Length: 146
Image (cartoon, rainbow, N blue to C red; front, side, top):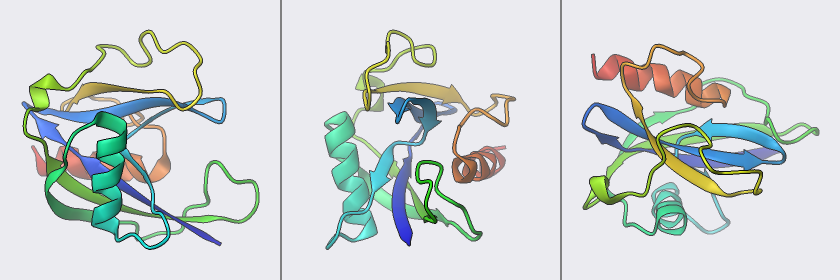
């Protein structure tokens, strides 16, 4: 079994946008995005996810990375391989995005509630993002900007 996930990398003023979310009882910091739905292309998926999650139009999508290694899903106990596709994108007014300054600030324990924040590209922590594939991409994003 496979699950296909599509995520966006939004860069602005030496920061990248991340999403803090409670998923199945776990606090997860990830790139904005989500699961591909039947009948959708990967770009269409990201456009939909950004519109649903942020109420914004994702513009100028450019492929950044597709998973090149096996990754078991963090959220499925049965065998489920994750394939993730990442795009860089822009929005019309990134400074207008509603963000918090600290991870999960004011989130409480509401399932599937997303809070966004800007993460500095020079953030030293390799574990700034929770999911294994996101951690690889985080390193790639940081390397590409140094």
